[in-house]
Length: 200
Image 1 (cartoon, rainbow, N blue to C red):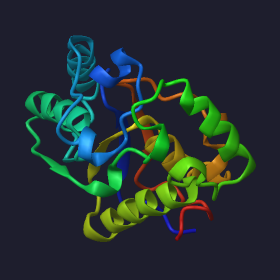
Image 2 (cartoon, helix red, strand yellow; image 1 turned 60 degrees about the horizontal axis):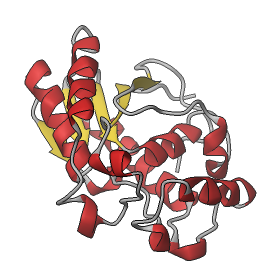
Image 3 (cartoon, rainbow, N blue to C red; image 1 turned 135 degrees about the vertical axis):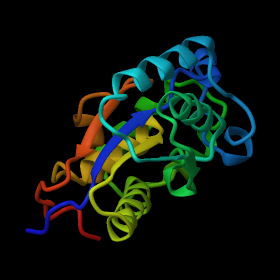
């Protein structure tokens, strides 16, 4: 099986004002200009940056939402790497749940587990999220070799992306360990074999 050209680290944004308000903010019309990091979120971003400072991060890519851009900017200050935004790392769109309580996530996740293609209430399907996120990583594989690349994104987007690296259906993303705010995980290491689910 083909091996990865690069090492990929994935980071969820630090605690955001939306997290504190306990509301869903997934519409770019809201998330790109509002609901940045809380003070706790800024602290989490700094701590995460220090934690990965020995991993020689070459490139940082982030969602264009305010909370991810602010996270990436803080990390960039520590690592001296200029972040680049890409809409394919955006939050999953939660449709009619926009602005509602974060408790809505559980309702959506239960439906995901039954059908990876479900779009009830205008929600973006896990199949769609995985397709755009995997396509982005595949593009980076074509562009770079031997790089350590940090992807700063959102909880659902990262867990759904991770599902492709664990050979599970995208709708089963919640069976993977929860990705905490500000947490950094390794998605794939250069030289490791790609699994069959990664290829588009």
